[in-house]
Image (cartoon, rainbow, N blue to C red; front, side):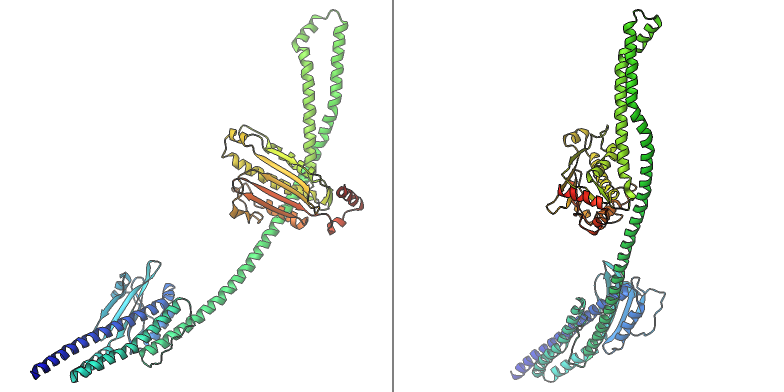
Amino acid sequence: MTWIITGLVMGIVGVTTIFSIQQEQKYFRTELEYQAQVLLDTLELTLTDPLYRLDADLLRESMSQLGEYQALLTVGSIYDAQGYLLADANSAIAIYTTEVDPIGRQLVQSSTTMVDWYTEELRIGRAIIVGRKPIGAIQIGLSTTSVQQQITAVRNRGIAIAILATIVGAALAQWISRSITRPVQALMQGTQQLATGNFEHRITLSSQDELSILAHAFNEMGAKLQKTVHLLGEKNQDLEQRTQELTQTLEELQNTQAQLIQSEKMSSLGQLVAGIAHEINNPINFIHGNIEYLEEHAQDLLDLLHLYQKHTQTLHPDLVDKLEEIDLSFLEKDLANLLRSMHLGTQRITDIVLSLRNFSRLDEADLKMADLHEGLDSTLMLLQHRLQANEKHPEIQVQRNYGNIPRIACYPGQLNQVFMNILANAIDALEERKKECLYQDIEADPHIIQINTHCSSSNWLIIKIQDNGPGIPEQLQSRLFDPFFTTKAVGRGTGLGLSISYRIITDTHHGKLSCQSVFGEGTVFFIELPPQTTASYHSLDKTEKVHQTQSFTT
């Protein structure tokens, strides 16, 4: 019975010992695999960037550092996207190979982590993926010698004294767990900190085993990464500063170029318009002045003809035939209509010439006393051909709501240029809207440009130019006054009009130019000119100052 119990106990102890040994072996293998997984994750995180940039020197240096710890690491290899070997932990020199490594190709093509157990080592590897595309692969091998030694010790102690071996084995298992799991967890936490960008994190282990050596290598790698990131940050800051300087220089060059182009264009345009106005004005004055004499002479001839008919009882047959042929009564009425049309036409030309003369002051460099309403009317006169109705669209209505504003000291030609740019843009916007509407739709909802002028309570002159066009998208409104920015098609705009207008109002006249627009409803431009109390006012002669003072007081 004793032997049976002893045998039973020994059998139970034996089975327990065998089961314990098997469990310990499985446990150590699992721990080693976990350790290998963590190390592989760390290396993948560290080497992804240099592998993506194919930085062979950095890859070789990293693997060479790992090769120094051969007691733990038996294999360390990095492959490119085709499976060629790029760096090896056991080779300190550059690797040049013309053949694809079968293991490297298998790893690159695999979508999972490959784990292989051998007699003396554990090999683990996987493909490195960036943007769902493999850029290479990495493989490491960890020695299983220490694990085998631990399993043998547990088995020997279990055979010697079964029960004690079981207790000691359990205690030993617990101790081994503490000695491996905690360092591995520390390595894992360090990897997570590195992944989040905390390159200052360091791993501290009190043991003096292979894991502590690995932790030391990890700390050195983190220090190098921290230094590299710091250098990159400094270079990036220098590049940002240089970019800002270049951007500012480019903006200044664009503004200068825009001013030079516009100044030259306006100077030439002013001379051309003034010359045309002068050449047209002389002959039209002759024609307009002689129409009155022509009316008087024609009336005298008609009166003479009537007197001749009245006092001559019998007319010659040829005269009778000629009178019937020309239809004297119709000729008399039509001649009056022709003379009246000629008079209206010459008056129209005279008004246009006056508008041209007002608008031709674009290149004047001196301050002048000017009536802004005259400038607005002259600009509208020059744009009349674009406002008139045709077979495609009705007339664009212009509503003038002029307030009682004084003459001001300004640069009239430049302000006329601003009026021209804003009004032309308003017409362009309305013409764009016409393309989307039928003729009868436009008649029902006519296109309108409103011009309002008044003085504010602080004596600022306010000019509001409003249209009911398609409006401007909100994301574009902040760029309206940028040089060379335009929303028009190629060839229809240079992007200088509003930019030059903004500088004329703000820089030259110390005023304000702003825009409010609701997409789909219309756009309003506000021109605000300050009271003439600046130094520019004092540059006028005494007579002009008196006229201006009277304008403001009345």
